[in-house]
Length: 493
Image (cartoon, rainbow, N blue to C red):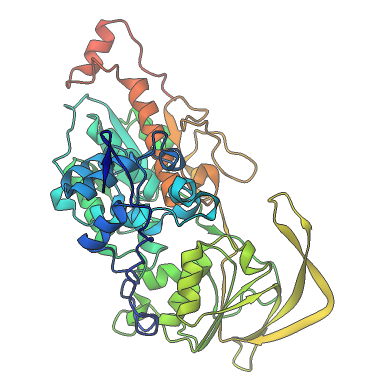
């Protein structure tokens, strides 16, 4: 890369380095990772494309504000450990975010090099993953001495992990309560192995344990203990609620309760967390259909239909009530699905699931649609075409039209919820209770991993500011020091 008057100048002749993917016909038969990731040579070449902008819009587009040009420059210099340290200042999960974040609408969507269609943006996600896959090169995390405060984090998904990591580094004793027998939340039950290997998530969880974070599994908060008990007899000073939004939305059509009609979260949890792909070796039965139709157009729908393909579906259809252009899924996921043989059926909506002679679903009746005027989202509203009805044969049908708030937030209590059951919280995660913070999907509704992480970081910063002055959070005597200075702790619930 040439240097002019002391600053780097990107090589404008280099095209974006292509993703390093497994052949589609081969990868669609098993759960191997689709993308092998960049080699060192590929990463170095791609790093030469970065413009090192004076005002890096890519950083503004990142929900956790990673210093993207700085870590890319370290890749160019071959100082991978230093580049990873730069990422870790803002994000503890680069190997995960590099794989699953929607970079095309966030950091890469703001990349100056890709503006106006002149060229493709820098492959920021691939470069972040490249560094994230070398955790052994990172410096040991710097943690502050224990400050004497205890925080309970409810939920070990991306938002809970991000909050717990920030608090642990700042000297808090943190306990994460997780309802499942393993940590990771949607990262392990929702995202398939071919997109996010479980060993990557395990490494990040092990990193939290190394920071001193304690995990309590099979712990359904709201059932085992509510907010009053956690903040009272259990001795926690604060709570961070990150229970997610995993309650499925119903289609509310006849036949929805037929055998082999699944909700996407159920289907993916069986395959990802309970290893239904290995049935009968593993005792998690599910239907490995030959004709599978998935209703929805988001990333979850893509994960479900691509999982069905790997479980032996000869015909795997993703049916969506709008066109491909309106699909909210990442373009990369749609591209991968089609390359693997998934059929896209646009402009249809389900009307009824039909049972066969055995009482199980055998087909679905769908209404053909056309696009009308834009709705509140700005996308053109699908409108039924009179008399245009079709029957699609299927032995497995999957609904992936979205989710609702997890009901455990209501059981935990102590906070104001809105009419849909989501927790009301401000931009820093503060709820109506001065000792409870919340973030992630249980506040915003279903969103992305990186947005949930951003919420966790903001909440952690607010908790730190509330309980610890910067010059006091240095010893186990922090509480005593506060009392000696006449400062009051937040009022108990």
